Length: 221
Length: 324
Image (cartoon, rainbow over all chains, first blue to last red; front, side, top):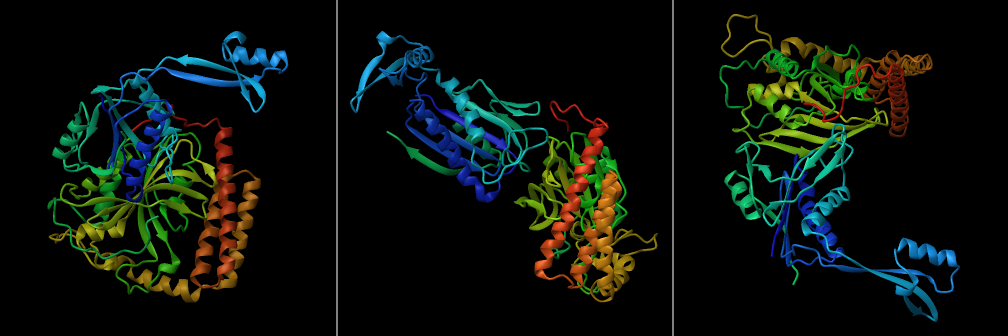
């Protein structure tokens, strides 16, 4: 089953925030996947002073089709309320389920939503996780409007060893496109290098004087 | 901002570049040419008594509004309460900061700072350079930002801050402020334990110049100003001067001249520091005085912003994509 791997690379993260940040990033992504009905086998998060890394293993290539249910008005509600519900739920009265709740009958619509490609879902979740990130303190950088703990410079997002197509708009004319390039130790090995997966990153980073600290590992089976 | 407390160097800097000049004035000249080459306007010090380089209008006021602005300057900084009668090898009531303001923050802010250390002869592959969380806040300026102390082998050599607010106003775009405590940095680079022994204008093997140390130039001032700050100033006159400066500031604000008003605000701020050094201000009064200066600073910032806005932001940069 394919692996997802994310690295957020930027200026140093204050020491006291590093481990929790890696865990938070992992939690935000895992929660997003679970809410979307996507299963995975296990997750791990890693941290170095300049990067947060999350891996999620055992993901499907496509999200399963889902049934989305919506509760409507009472069956004896005014006609325009019922019409409004049918219109917004894109359904008709005869296909709606009539369900009894505590002696009152309500309309319910249900719809099958086609599963998204996991890579597209991941692209959305990366952006959402960055937007919602719970830093204890964060800042704007230059003309950017997106806040982060310190300047955020680049993002690696790989799913099944391929770059997740996508980007995040940081505001002020700046956007970060997901890629596969990162950097070694600031002083000992400052050159950039490209990776095709987490194990490659870990090996190459280690060769370039950066050692990953495991923030958290969890298994879900 | 970098405090006047100058810890003694843990060990002297190995001569990474033995041929490079390390006198106090050579370090200033090198920083100036480095930042000039990066596109900074090289300014001279603000001709007012200030506690830190941040108080120069070139930082406080120019950090506001959308106009681009990069400047570097040395700022003599006065902290009356830090006087030690010339007897403490690490503490001064008058010292120098080298200040850089870059707006909007360049993408490579941190790299620019590190390169400047290399320029001063600190080889970053031989020394332990560390970034230590140090968020900055100035209650009198109503300003804050996030940033770092930069440590070299365990000693602070500089500081940088990503300004978020000044005078209670959002910085849009945000700028980067870099501050070097020059004495501390020079002591480190020269491997000297007593600030008064700093070589001001000569190199160790130099026999051609009239050699001056930091002590030759500033020791007498430290002794005399310590007496001045702690013993001689007349507190009732200082109080009157504070009130006059406050009044002047308000009048100039009414006339919508932000820069003269700001001078008076800074004057009030320094008079407060002098009163504080004299022990003339109680703990409860302190907050009230700081609040009065902050009110002036905030009004000056608003007046400055309004005056520039009225002129349609003469130096507005095209912000798309930022700049380096």
